[in-house]
Amino acid sequence: MADAAMVELADRIRAMLGDGSEIEERAMFGSRAFLSGGRILVGSRRGGRLLVRVVAERAAALLIEPGVSRAVMGARTMSENWLDVAAEALADDAALMGWIDVAREDAGSEDAEE
Image 1 (cartoon, rainbow, N blue to C red):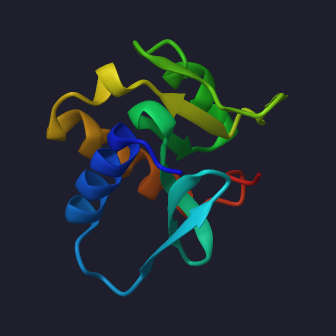
Image 2: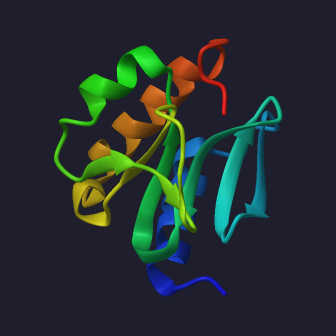
């Protein structure tokens, strides 16, 4: 079941991505995932955390940003391509849009694999 922070973040993401038909939204792994070309771009997770998929080469630099960590699902730490961004780091729309832009830039890369 979705918590209020997760629903609020999903609403913000949806508004920023617009009504473009290239974005698909679906419930996945206890989150709201936003897909582009059938691949997860970003996701809204419990507690208002943002799941972001990036290329491995960029992940190390992004991990030094405040509130950013490797994504964990259950007991499994995900690959370096998956980052969690804390709700506190997404307080304003500019910050959220910055992360969505990072995900979009990396979405077409073969290196942004699971």
